[in-house]
Image 1: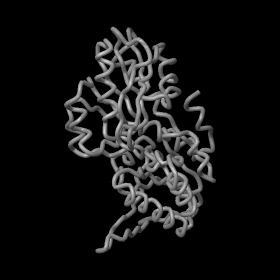
Image 2: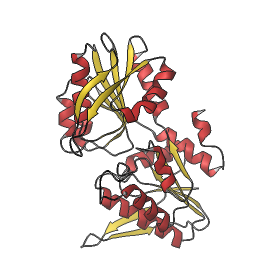
Image 3: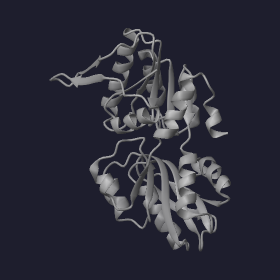
Length: 310
């Protein structure tokens, strides 16, 4: 088995390699003057079980092309099996036709990864579970819930705790964590006037006197969380925090979170964060390296991955 990484999240890849007690294999990803990507695998991979770690986060198109070219290089170097490890799967929010004459880009990206030569995919907290079906190769979708749940228990306890789904679509995710914490849930009723913007309409549930924690898979602009926090506090919540698997945090989101009424935002290291996010006073990062390392070890040993969550 060998672990490689392109450029999107070297910090996480090195942590995964440390957890597996093995070095990160040598690979060079360079760019020509016109920004074409060139990949060179610097050690023998013939007959090896290869795991290539690459989140398709900002800049999404560059990181996606890096991944595709890396997979192609590994196939041409006679790797026995190539597993694309995508801590964050970009384009996942384009999982259906939202209106006429629009693409289903998540399916297109799944096709590209398969055509490039990946034998299987390992990812975490897909925006929609059905995206697994977009791939025509085995796909394992891990859940950050256990990591988030234990951090909630350690830092917030369970007394007067209420978990909040920021929309109806996230109820199953929120309920799964709440059940194991013995907490109640409430739902934010919101509307999206246009992509990237949201408006909180109502809070479904009694949050008065409760410690509220918003649970979501992706935080992008942060507008939904900031608006939900304001609405929850207006309804009598004593404090509001948020836990999200993937911190996309684009377009000034770090400043928006820092100046909001959120006590803190907790995200995982599925996406490598810029210094502005690392310096934000109320943003904290949890590592999923151990979870991914366990899944990689199980795949390499042909063991059950779902047993991690039983």
